[in-house]
Amino acid sequence: ADLVMSATNAPTPAPTPAPIVGTASPTLGAIYTDEECNRWTTLLVSADLDLSNGLSESEYKLFLSSIQDPPYIAEYFKSYDGFDNLPWAFRVVHKSLACHCEELGFGDGCCEGDNAEVLLNGLSDGNNDGDIPLEASKDSPGVEEEIYKHLFCQQIAYVLTKSVPKPQPTIWPTDKPTRSPSPSTPM
Image (cartoon, rainbow, N blue to C red; front, side, top):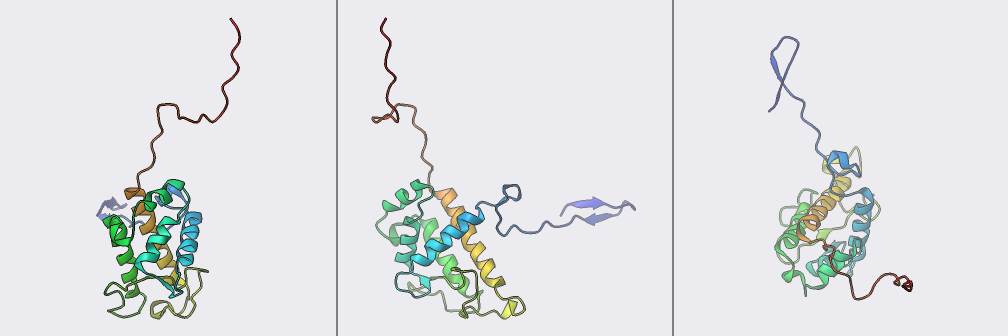
C-alpha cells in the first residue's frame, strides 16, 4: 500500500480509491457508457425468446449477434454457427454471468449444467420484479440489480473490446467511390 506522510512524519496508509462500477466518465476509466449499457440490457431482454427471464446459450449468441452499434460487432458474430463455436472468452462471460445467481441468493446449484442462464431479473427497467432475493439490500431495493447490471455491462464491454477486432481503414480506393469525380478541365 502507498504511504502518505502526516504532519508528524509518521506514515499512514493512503486512502483507497473507490472501485469503478460503471460510469460514462472516461476520466474515471469506464469502458462503456450508460447509453451503451442501457442498449445492451434492452437487447439482452429482447433476446429472451422463451420468456424464461434468463438467456440460454443460444439466446446469448442471439444477443451478441444483435449488437448493431458499432456495426462490425454484429458482422463478427454472424460468422459463428452457435454458442459452442463462439470464442472462449464469450462463453466464459455467459457462465460467469449465469453463476452470479448465487450472489443474488438463488442457491449454490443455480448455475450448474448446460441449462444455466444469464439472469434478466431487474434489467429491463431497473426495478426488482420480485424474483431477485434482496437479503443484502432490504433497506434499498434495486441495489443488487444495479450492481448486477453494471457487472453485466463491464463484462460485455471488456470482452467486446478485447476480442472483437475493429476494422482497419483501407489505404486503397474502394470499388465504389462515395462521391462522383469532379469534371476534368480541358488542357
